[in-house]
Image 1 (tube, rainbow, N blue to C red):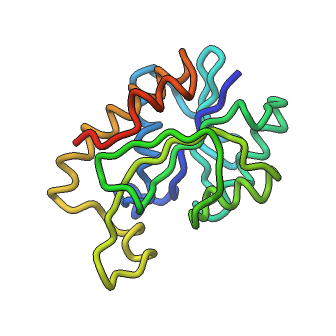
Image 2 (image 1 turned 90 degrees about the vertical axis):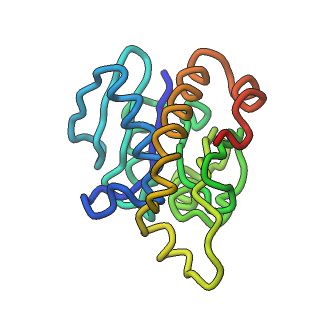
Length: 184
């Protein structure tokens, strides 16, 4: 069993913010697979076959709480999860799969690492940068995409959903080789 976890913030006001690109990518997967969500594990939760989908409602900085609940209930190993999140150091239109690593300053990843006690999980980072000069990171990630950025957004979230589907059928090395680059 695998878990695909999109990070973001649950309120409507955050729906189209850069921090919610993880939610947006998982939403594409849910729509493609006709998965109906329920309220479970402090999250929006869905399941199809051997894949669990999780959109934590704990807000970004407490994402680890929901992840730990899911892992405990399904007896998942840390290697069974793929976390999808934004990355301000990558340009919009860039995807980067990574096998493990540090949180890199991302509070959602930091919460998951702290509460699971491990950084040994796969992740897909979707670029939302660069941050304009003299813009606080919080304002940037909690801000909406510009009109110009929104034109790329549908393409990159669809491509990211394709990549996750391939990841579930293959492995991290395969998708790294195919998708770790700027696409648009």
